[in-house]
Image (cartoon, rainbow, N blue to C red; front, side, top):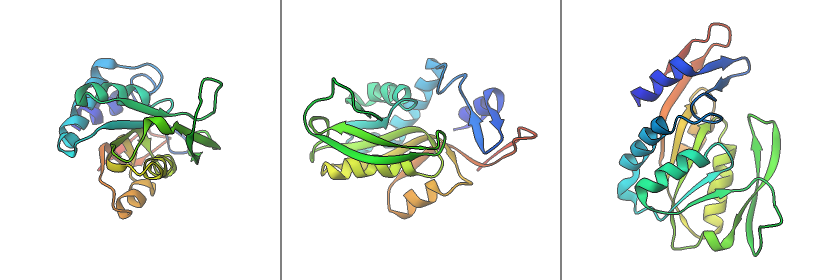
Length: 191
């Protein structure tokens, strides 16, 4: 998605440690009009997959998943990273290691929100090592539902997450794939 490449080059900040900050439009302050263009692209790519639910993980995936849910006219479920007192009933639970936060979270979805009849589109803002996606895939498959597709806003193609997911046989569509980033110069190379 050429528009996303331009937005990342203009507004993204490359930090040491292969970190790309896009907090001015994607995961802190939201450029809702731009995110809607991204959600339209996810709809275009997956509209023939008979999607019944969209699944993401809190927190940064929620905005783009919600806007995409409007285009598909389906519910959006987000996996929670901690159990709160307002979660009740049976839960699907998996562990996910975060590349960005360097920690492990129990990720939780109430069983009443995923079932064997669902065809799920998994969406997230970033793909690095693939750990979050593997966790979300295990929640979907644990429910007996089908992973109909996976959409990522920004994939770090120089890390192995995308390769792992594609080799496992899932349809993965990334709007931007970064092949390299330089923390000293700020240079970004897209695939």
